[in-house]
Image 1 (cartoon, rainbow, N blue to C red):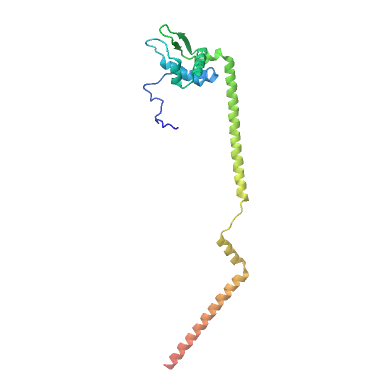
Image 2 (spheres, rainbow, N blue to C red):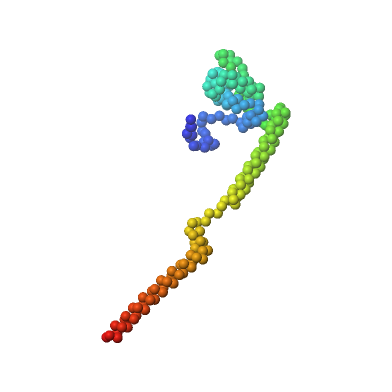
Length: 212
């Protein structure tokens, strides 16, 4: 099923119904501290956060499951990872049996990197590997395009030259001595017969003039 979008650019067009999430959250994603599912749960908890009245969010697990389209086990695992990453803190409510969640601002990159140097090193190795792979893919593409061009040129050289039918017939006429001779003889005979006819007409005219 394909959805027809709004075709309205998002950036700078939002006036309501949006959440302000710091870009530094993506450092957690890049390092593998949280997953895409965890990010969705974090944003939803941020939306549920009631700063004015309670100072925390208190959605139920079923509410989170419906809100982010995930199963119960996945939601529970996401909450654990978010808590281990220091992005939320889970507690108990005095007023109900629901868990409550405090949603925290992500650390800046420099602060986060100091706490997980091994993961930072692994990420740098991954970037290097992906960079080399991208360069190799680019070289393979260039080689493929070059080989394809050479093959096309080779096919053009091997392709036979087909002359038009009219040109072939003209070539035969010019190269065949017998044909050209026959044409010349036929023209000479025709011119000679025309001369004879003209001479007979002239003689008759002279005879008529003498009688007059």
